Length: 380
Image 1: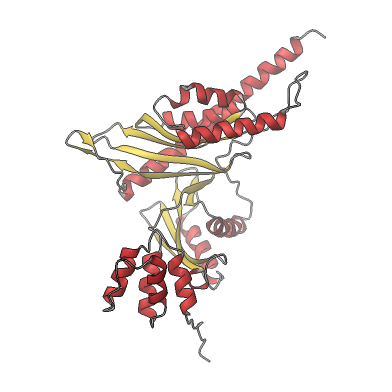
Image 2 (image 1 turned 135 degrees about the horizontal axis):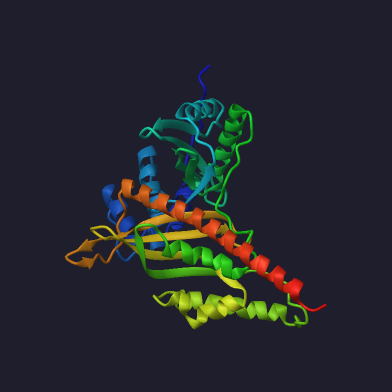
């Protein structure tokens, strides 16, 4: 028996809703062009709603619907990435075997393929559907594609993937299969700062990260986001206005982000930022620009953040693009970075973040020992 696929019939109401909900992409000009392609000329004075109402009532075949949906789709913003380190060097053969086993039992809406990339890398491409029931039926299902990269080194394997729930779920299942194959649980190392209770140390993670990228020199911080770490009041300190103080601090932070977005070359030394830090606020997300030390010296824009700021979990990062040097001046618009260079930059972020965590742990240990020494030396 032949398995039937779902048959869809888009009503005029669904087409109307799909077009109306894409105001930025489907403008009056676009609507007039869509109609013109079908040999229909509407008045440029017609309102957007009137144009959509007229177009939605027209007959639409499969090709027409695809054209409309392509017009309304947002330009593909690449997802931020995250990574996990396994402190063991996996072999390409066992990675491929695990991927093959997973593919055989993957969900119906998921298609997984894999291929080798060089002699030390395996890439799994996952195609799946994302459903948002909050959207009109015609655009509820969105096709997605994600790459899970296995980078094999001498004593470890780095797995890099998009920072979304579906990809993390796929990796979790792959990790379970790897554990079964190795007949032991392979430990996972993630970039997390939840162990640091000091707001200063959490902020230092970001300031160290952006200033110590190998082969780069920091030129500017263009944006940061902050969050307050909940702290117990010190002994003898009155805490009657805690809620009011919290609201005032949040309002102050929000005003700064809205008005100046905490931007500028002197950001980290500014009085406003120092004020936030004293109140227990710390950086949770940052965008910065660094110049590559080697010619042609592009100005690369990076982004790093934590999905769960208070818990210090879910480190994600991204290479937003680069401003290239043309006639001794940087371009005004940001350009995509070539795939090979981008992979190198991502590796530098991962390595710098891991090294920074190690440095902060040492510093936290020294601070803890100093406090313990002071407590022991204090008079009874």
